[in-house]
Amino acid sequence: MINIRYHVYSLVAVFLALAIGVAAGSTVVQRSVVDNLKSTQGRIEQNLDDLEAQNAALQERTAALEGRAGSLAEEGPGTFLTDELLDVPVMVIRSPGLSGDALDRVRGALKVAGAQTVSDVELKTAIADPDALAAVAADLDLPADAPPEQVQAAIGEQLAGLIEAVHAERPPTVTPGAPGPGTEPPTTDAPPSPAVRDLADFLRLLDDAGLASVRGSLGDAGVDTQQMEVVTLGGLTPDVDATVVLKPLLEALAAEGQPMALAADAALDQPLGDGEEAYGVVAAVRGDGRIRDQVSTVDHVGDFVGVSALVLGLAAVVDGQVGHFGVDEGSDSLLPPRR
Image (tube, rainbow, N blue to C red; front, side):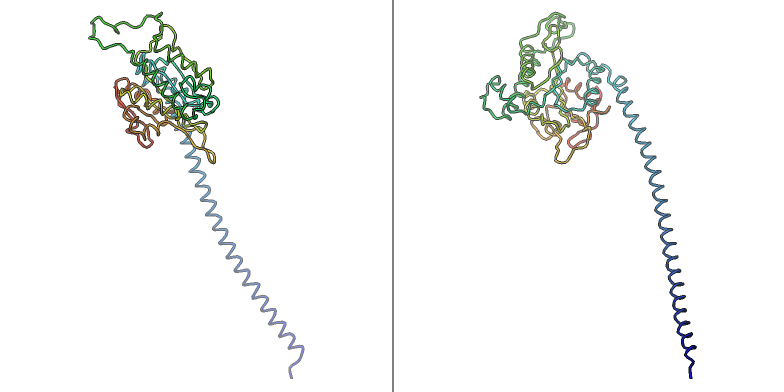
């Protein structure tokens, strides 16, 4: 006969053994999981340390490259572009919202190259204002209710016609040393020609209407405008689409069949926001065969390579040569050949 006390002790022993087995098993499993997690964490931490070191090295390298690019943009023009456009009269027509740094570098490069910026025309955001456009419609021989896009195109075409008239006043070619017109520079007190006065008056009209801000010596006595070349700076900018004026302007200039203009875009200062669109003139020129063969283009004009391409490309335009420079679609090469 089994003693009840022995039976109880046996049951207790069985349950105690089970408890000890469960506890021991769970301890082994937990230790394995913990060891595995610790190993994984160590690898992750090591990977993060490696990535942080790589990022730090890349940031240091990027800062060094940006520093060199900035120094080159400041010092390069004086070393490589001096007198490339000596005494060439230049008219700059630019869209609103153009990067201030890019504009300063273009101005600096043109100055170092010896170009004479006789007119700097900044189109204003009012160029997209129907009321402001309607106010000048009559001056363009358009009805007061003309659609804004018709007035914008007419402004560009009128500008082109007046610029062509000034460009046509270049002196005839003469044999070196032979007497004839064009052998002497204009006297310092020579009055502006009728074509120059007409262009200056039209620019003043745009300025008075708030459609443009105009600076420069165009229209002053003694200012040389013979062989005046045109630079259009179209952005890129999300502020307003100035190509509605600039493209008709360039189309009309191209129709003359004689190169006299270069179009350039600077890169965006800031990334575009949701729904924003960047407007530039270079793509419009490169995508239109009627303009492409007569108007040179430069993309990314804000850095040293860009301003160098602008100066050398404009010098080529003076010689009757057209090219497309930069890295975007439609470019022929990064830089024009030096003369």
